[in-house]
Amino acid sequence: MSGRGSIPAASLFGLLILWTVAATLTADPQVLPQPWALAGPFLRELQSGDLLYHLGATLLRVIWAFALAMAIGCALGLVMGRFEKVDRWLDPWLVVFLNLPALVLIVLCYLWIGLNETAAIIAVTLNKVPNVTTVIREGARAFDPNLDAMARVYRMSAWTRLRHVLIPQLAPFITAAARGGLAVIWKIVLVVEFLGRSSGIGFQIHLYFQLFDVAMVLVYALSFIAVMLAVEWTFLQPGERRVRRWRVA
Image (cartoon, rainbow, N blue to C red; front, side, top):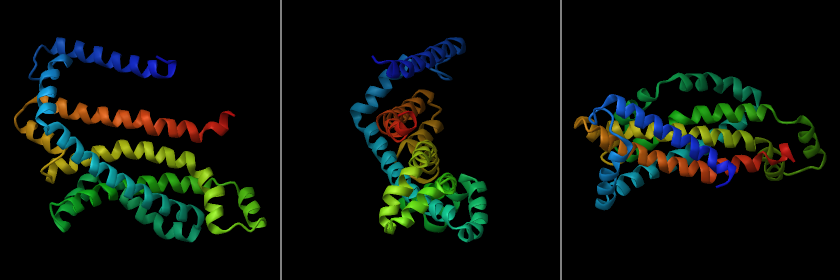
């Protein structure tokens, strides 16, 4: 195993040891079961198809909300960072939504739109757009004016300037917004499912919470955490290293 992969693996193994020690000290599987005690429930849920079904439902909501939040947030952040008048008008709105609790937005969306997929995805998207906008706005404010001047001298079209001047400078900020956004979005999706959906990891956690079944709560929670870790290590971290290569070249 490479050095880059061995450190996260060792770190996770340390977390597993800590969990084992905590479960041993607790000495009550109804409070905190041992890690290996989850193997049986996990295999049962996997074989029945319930785990994959609910994982898929949550993942689909995460993908939709993530794509919408990144698209809207990047567009707003770029415009606010480039045009001061627009920023002055929209900044109070941004502050309001940044400080509006996620739970309030979720409840309002369910009340206004109904207990459906549209309300769920809109609620998650609205919770994340302000954060993405803030990060991208700071990136747009940090643009190199010399590169802007070069683009004007060479009379680049708006599309060429966006592709070859603006986006390369925004890439680290987009990556940071994506990494932070994905972690926040899936947590909000679980709350949305907990409160008003009939499928997904959050729905299952709500079900087993009512049954006081700690093991099943952990099975579903850890299953989706594993999916998110795979996405992080497979796509987001390699993407971040790629956009930072010029700094160490």
